[in-house]
Image (cartoon, rainbow, N blue to C red):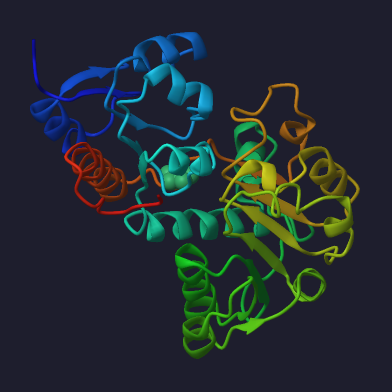
Length: 323
Ligand code: DGY
C-alpha cells in the first residue's frame, strides 16, 4: 500500500500545478471539462487527504463528512472561496488555501474591457456588422457614453479594485469613488479616491464596478433599489460574483433605460440560463467568467494551488491561506 497522500483534483488544471501534485501524491484527476455531479464528487473524495477544487464545487459539511476525518487541506483554484464553508473547515482543523495576486491585473483588465465594451456598444456594433445591417456611416447611430474625466465607483477597494482604479484614473483621468468597510489610504494617495457611502457612490458614478467578495452582506446588493439610484447614463460592471446583482432587477433596469448598459463576467446562475431575458438585450455584454483566463494568471493560480495543497498535506503553513 502506498504511503503517498491521496488527493482529488476536481478538474484538469495547467501542468505548472498539476505536475508537482501528480509527482508527489496518489492523484485522482477529474478529466471531464464539466464538473463532477454531486454524488460522483462525494464518492471520489472518500478517503482523500487533500482536494484541489474549483469554484464550481460546493465544499460543505456533507463534503467534509464524505471525505472523512483524514482530510487535511482544501486548495481552491481561485481567489474567491464562497464555494467553501470556511467556518466548518476551521471547526474541523482543515486548512483552506486560495490563489490571490496572480490574477489581479487580468481581472481588472477584463473589468475595464467590459466597461469600454458596454459604454461604446462594441459587441452590439459587431453583431450589427455580422447581421449585414451596416449600410452607411450613421451620424446618429451607435452612440455610446464617454469615459474621459468621468467618475468610476468601485465597490470593494481590495487588490482588484485598486487595479481597476489605476486603469480608470491613470488612463482615462476618472475621478474615483469607492465603497468599502475599510479605508484604503493607498487608493486615496495614488488615485485621489474618495470613500463614500453606497448611496453616494450610486448617485455620483458614471460607471459602477463590483470588486467585492460574495457574502451575506453583498448578496443581492445590486437590486431594483440600487439600480434605481444610479444615473440613467450609468454602466454597471460585475466581474466578481453573479449573486451580488439581482439578475431580474438588472434586466428591468437595462430594458427600461433606468441605466445605460452592463458588462458581466459573472452571472447567477453560472452558466446563465439560455432563457434568461438578459441575453436578449443589446446593452448587456456577457462573458463566461473568464477574467483570470490569461496564460500567466492561470499558470500562477495552478502553482499556488499546488503549493497550498502540498504544504497542507505536510502540515506546513500554506503559501496563501484563507483558514
Ligand atoms: C476567482 O479566482 O475567484 C475567479 O472568479 C476565477 O478565477
